[in-house]
Image (cartoon, rainbow, N blue to C red; front, top):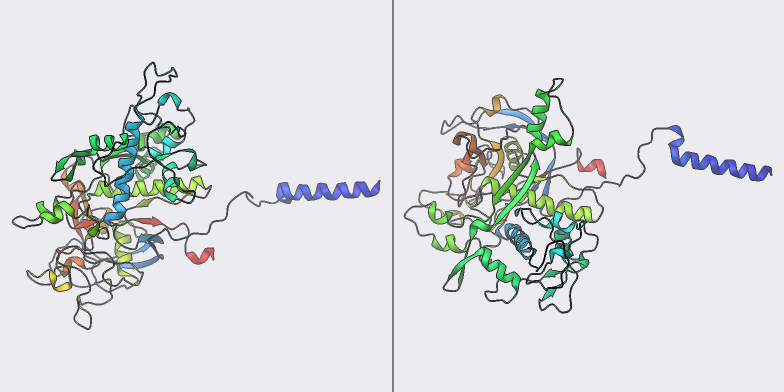
Length: 497
């Protein structure tokens, strides 16, 4: 009897220790471990402090930049500018989502709430959609008000359509289907993006929506239909308003209050391919205007013809596809992809070299052999002395000390920062930024966004790491692209080793 009581006491003691932490504060025990990995194609930029602004005389006496010592937290930055082929993945995802929306239109005979055996002319029969269908939340960008749910029914052997099953290890399937546990429970109809003639109803919808016509066999796209719609919480506006109303009768909290600061954004995401022609009067750039984005020869060129809003839409989509994949695998999500702030861009471009005007570390644009170190306009009327007459493939020049390519020249890059000549007089010295989402009715001065890095058409002054320029956020050009950044969660990688 004593032995039984002794064993019972041991069991009770052990169980009490495991459940309550022996009365001590030990935190939750069901938390996953976090080991950060570099996102594909991105470079880790460590935290640091530097003197932002020109390190030499203001030669053109522009008076748009003054020196300020600032500190920057660690973050990731794309190794190169976003290329045509990378942006095309975004474009095709949007097209695919819109096509699926149209294929999901109610096309049955009889009332919506009545199940019918009439075969639809479309892939989806809305009568078959279940209320708990999760696919639509991760697949459709909700640009159509009349489509609430898009469901993909199991394959019917009598269907004449050609189906392509996503592989178990195919990230594309997981990317599209997000939270769905088994991507193979749904079927992805095959679409031949290069085919002109197809009996597939999906191709018919593509033609009706996105093809304006054909000229000598070439597709003329209906660019205004490439619509991406998304929502985001304007955290800065929410925080500022909450601070103003603190301890007043308007002090509010909760989800209903936050809904007021959710911004609904609709963006036409197709690049402006005609900028190469319209930007330069009395110049022949028709080939670039028609083929620079679509042709396979330009896949690894930086995408241009992108305005500030389109660049932000890309960042939102990129966040969506990676976090949908992580949620589907029960893994912690990542911070948002976004455009770099002006401070982050200059800090990354310098590559840890405080006083150097160029990313490669010296005051000259040539190396010891006399070769130019970036793609810019080195001489009067001579664009080709550096090896390129216009934008060229990424990674053609050496990276800076952080491993970032083309931080000077090739194409200039959007930042998230509003252009203000006096911003250094009021910006914070920690992760300094000045952001504003302009409205269509705003004055033009409020639409200016900082552009950094210079381009293939600029002289050496504009490709310096400290030179500030701007463009209006609703304007696209043939010489401005972008790259993304992502905040690093923590202080430094070594903290997780």
